[in-house]
Image (cartoon, rainbow, N blue to C red; front, top):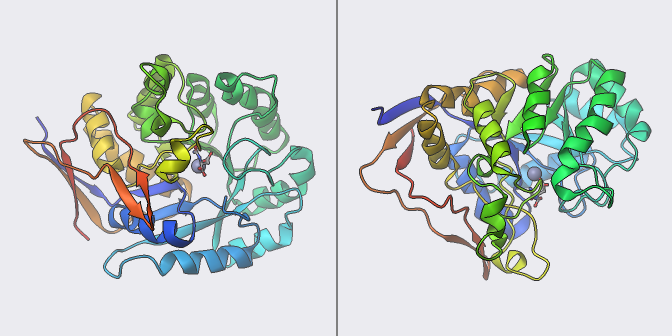
Length: 349
Ligand code: NCD
Ligand code: ZN
């Protein structure tokens, strides 16, 4: 039985750090365990220009503890007013690593998102030309489509037509939650990849709804049926280079989640690597964890793996993580996988 595993320091290719007090509280959890992270731009107001991204990067870096080796990979929030030349300049400067497409109204702070992909085609064409990835929140938002079908319908009606129209565009399907999403990514060419979150490998929709509503398991895209969770596990643990880790760790205060209209988002930065080691061990695939968390994402973004190493050690008794973390006068509730965690994470620098 493997009880110790050393891998390249992982990257989190989909992360929400927020701003202000929240940013200060959560950054160190990511920078402790991850070498780099793709930073989501859905602040209020969103990060839509290179100048805003540069300022946000500086605010993030000011919250990274001195002894943590961490770099940001900034993204821009695509709007119908995005200026293609600013995107190109930000990418050329090495600041902007991707552009995020939120269909308007799909999720937290997505009101300025895209209503009609046709309006942003000139920007997407430029991105295809320079090889800058488009990160898609793959859910349609029309009221007539059931929330559990929104990913599947997005793939059929928006993503596939877009990829046919612009095959050179590099695309990441963010936080896939369905077997259809995994299948579509697998059938794609080298221009297509998909991130998978930690929590979607662990919970299905029953965890949210059976025995009382569990707001801390509510996120978007919402967790689906068990068959989908199993398909995601198979994809993540396959070693296939198209699948990599994007935690989608998305902190909201406990009070805004335990609420009559609770926010979507699960905070998992603190215990993600321990959860993943547990999942990969359960699947008999510990040897594929490094590909998923440390190699495949870097390869897609055209960067070398982190130089640092991480050792995962399986303890005899459970490793404890706090249930909540303090943010100003409030707390953020940490993802509870629902089972004890035995894998301890050691950062070897
Ligand atoms: C994210 C957030 O809170 O910013 N929420 C979530 O449930 N994942 C937004 C997102 O990535 O959809
Ligand atoms: Zn997200």
